[in-house]
Length: 622
Image (cartoon, rainbow, N blue to C red; front, side):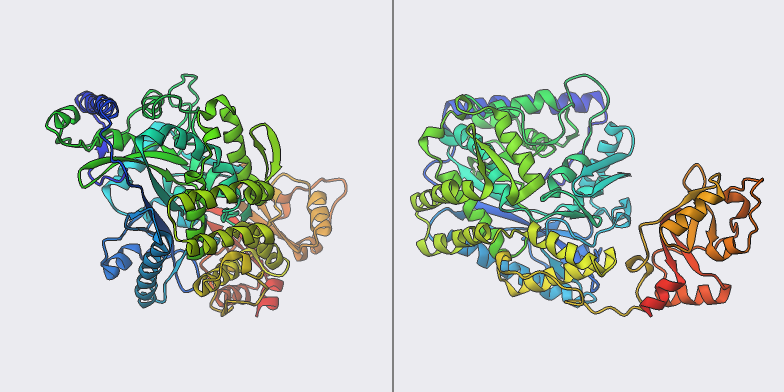
């Protein structure tokens, strides 16, 4: 989907034209494979850095376009949301000090972004798999980057889905909600690594990339929180699949595989099996204005761009994606690793990239024709388990059980060392970056482990929003210092962030675990709940879960209960209630309570009850 000039397929003639070019691109690839027309004798690496833009309070900032204009560098480009940007790093030949060169370029570009972001009301750049402070209200259609390709994709996905998208992710906590656009996908930020592969190796190397994906992910996880919920070690995996899921209730095979997936099977003879399977399984969504016929271009002695195939490939999001491209008019193939999260530091990201490339290059010959040696679901199961449990995962490795720590340290790190040595990588770089991976294993601390442990510690004393902001600010400061995550100490309350309580919004301090009663619940039940949970105010809701009143302890004390007449909540509730939204400041909430002589304020967002703030809460805060 990298092309900006895409549009929906709206007519039969557009569909026929697109399918002609798509099938023609496949024919062209068959000719190129038969005549071995792909680049030889060289391998390159590349990377894409996705990043978050946050404001001075470490919440999402929608200033991406303004920042892009100030940076004025072609390495930077837009992403789906207005609070994200992407950096495309230059491809580098896989040799010598290429990884330290990659780090230097990335650090330099990030430094430029930090400098310009600071000028925009003290905005900041953050590398994190999922931003801990992101809220559902940040993920509305208005925050999609106003470029045609993003809106086209949003519209076509909604049209095919038929209704709102739904999320259901269960980890330590459970998240269930519906959303109206694909913007939940923008919660995910990654560090995508590309490795060019020779034609003669592409089938075995692609299969190998699938086999090692689970173990690789287990030591790289950095996204355990979403909307304040503790979910998977790498929640991005579940979130991305569900946020752009188009499947309906049809029993037809087509479109019953999610467009974000691990894959369906091993490759056996040709990488074309992958593209052909995708054409069979997934309907085309987008088209463009085609200015070449791929087969005709080949007859002219030119390498075709395969525009139709690339568009189709760009709407199918495999965690290991096979890509076709060109370098100075010479065709090449590469594998794009899409599961590595952004952060925790640039050092950690480059170590992840080097480790993955090393294991890819160090594939032992005994693992060729891997489809004869292991079932595909073993690799797929390992990947899902690693996303769930990270460094604590126990893997199936060619039929034998082994822990993540043991597999990485005793099997994969030696593979990586040999692969990097074979690729003539600088020994100093090999030692430095692989040591980061080894120390991560020894300390048993990935980004996810640090975030989870820190968050649990903070939540003992702080509200969810203050904990998230504290966590994010500490992440930012530690990231700027550059020490890899295995050296990070856990966050403590009061660290990293200063908060002016009076000016702060209710969303940071309100109670979000709200007990409610129904209009028709017995008053005796209301009294019991308030006593059992030691609360003085309880909202009353109707069948649609809309707040219709409130009952206070004072309210109950003034009522003489008639044992012969069973009163229900709506008989005694206060109907004329005053509410506020989450943007109301603490001082303003105090003024409202004093002026109206009330002891609590329900907090509503889009007419939904999301929190409550009481007089006692304000006393503690102020």
